Amino acid sequence: MESMREVLEHELKDLYSAETQLVKALPKMAKGAADPQLRQAFEQHLAETEGHVARLEQIAEMANIKTRGHKCKGMEGLIAEGSDLLSEEDASPARDAALISAAQRVEHYEMAAYGSAKTFADLLGEADIVEILEQTLEEEKAADEKLTQIAESHVNDAALSAESGMQNEGADGGMAEKSATSRRSR
Picture 1 (cartoon, rainbow, N blue to C red):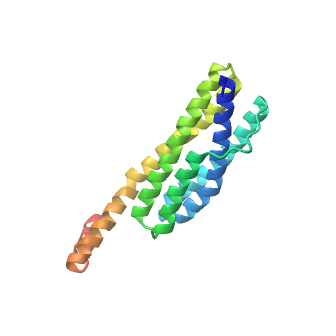
Picture 2 (cartoon, rainbow, N blue to C red):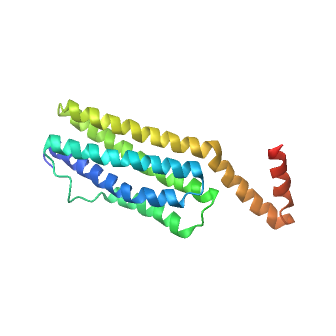
Picture 3 (cartoon, one colour):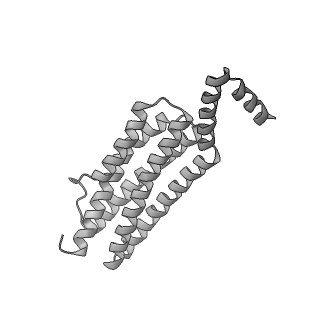
């Protein structure tokens, strides 16, 4: 690459590939989530991601860039890690916690990429492109915050409780978990 325009084009192609890969992966993550709130968050982000693809197509048209023919290897690897979780484990609160972690790595990757592309577009004086990229960047941040909220509000605790229950069940036939559940429901 010899110019900032080429760097921006590369970033946009990479983002387009990343987002189109995600459109295919998010339904699998939603289906594999045990927690209904997590499943809903994945489904909602799928709709947003489809919008991100459309925005990138809009930007490509504005900047006369061809988005096809490039594969984002970073996203490919992140999605492969998430797929491994779905194939290796049964649905459980612990797997949901791991899925949240995998999804947040995806969000952080996207936030870095959108932030960089926005900076490059700004340097090139592409105010319209900057505005579109900023909108998507804010949605990626919101998705990350939503995943944190789901993890911290109940998924991580459910995973820990399930683990404690399995350990206690092994020691006393499940009586400790039953009494802990009784105390929480009072």
